[in-house]
Length: 307
Image (cartoon, rainbow, N blue to C red):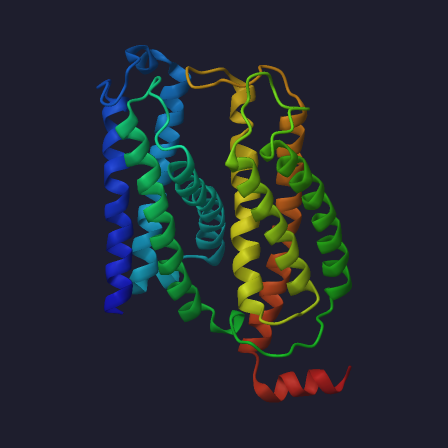
C-alpha cells in the first residue's frame, strides 16, 4: 500500500509544472512564449483550458488509484478516461525519447525550448506513473482479468472474433499508411508536413493493438500481456485520432496543417473507428472474463457441463 501511495503522489506531483504553466497562460502571463499574441487567440485559450482540465482528471485518477475510496468509483468512469489518457501519453513518451536521441530540442518558434522539456518530459513521467498506479489498482479491483487460465468461449465469442478481425483489418491499413509517411513517403500529406518518428510510433502502437485484440478474441495466453498492448495501442488510436480533428474546427497559432480535410484526416477517422471497435470487443471480453472469475465454482462447472 505504501508503494502505491508513493506512485500516486508522484504522479500528482509530475502534473504540477504543466498545470502551473497552463495557469499562467490562462491568466495572460506569457511565461515561456516568444509570441505574446498567442494569449489573444481564443481557440488556444479554450485548448489550454481543456488540456489543463485533462491534467486535473489525471491527477484525480492517480489519487483514486492509491486510496480506498477509488474502488467506489464506477468502473466506466475509471476505465474510459484512463484508456484515453494512457493512449495520449504513451506515444509522447516514446516520441520524446526518439526525438531527443536523434535530433535534440527543436528550434525555438512560438514556444521557448524549456517549455518542451517541462511539458513533454512531464507527460512522459506522468504516463509511466499513472500506468503503474492503474496496474496496481486493476489487479486489486478486478483480479480475475489477469489470471492466466484457460477459458471456455462465451456466448458472444463468434461476434467478438468477427469484429476483432474487422478492426484489425482497418488498423492494418492505417498503420501501413502511417509507416509509409514515417519512412519519408510524401503522398497524401499536407504540404510542408515532415516525415517524423511519430508516424512510425503510431503505426507500431496500432499494429500492437490489433495483434493484442486478436490474441484476446482467440483466447490465447498470456492474456494479461495481450490486454496491456491492446489497451495502450487502441487508446492511442482513439485519443490522438480524435484530437487531430481539432485542427479542422479552427486554425490556431500552432496549426501548421491544411485547412480542408484530406487523407491525413481520413486516416485519423479510420483509426478512431478501429479504436471504437477494439474498445467494444475488449469490453465484452473483460466483462465476460470477470463474470466467470466472480462466479461460484460449482456454478461455473455446471455451466461448462451443459456445453
